[in-house]
Image (cartoon, rainbow, N blue to C red; front, side):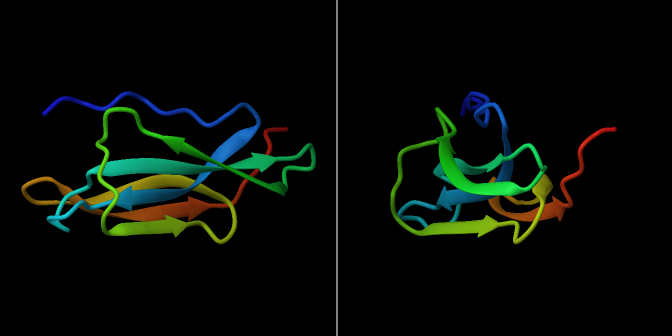
Length: 99
């Protein structure tokens, strides 16, 4: 297996969720996208959401699942590993602007 390419949110946006497909086996991630949320000048979400596909992560469309932060941004994820990555837990954090 080869590593997937990096995925970047558009300028002015932050990662706030993840969408995956586990394919027909329903066991491993076979297609991954990040959900990016636009941030306004007041450091609040504008309601504009963009899906950014991770190129090279697969093309499966079966068994879709997603998780998103109810507020804030996705700071990291905690993967569950076995024979491969089959689950992640998003860890969300409040959005703060640097002084």
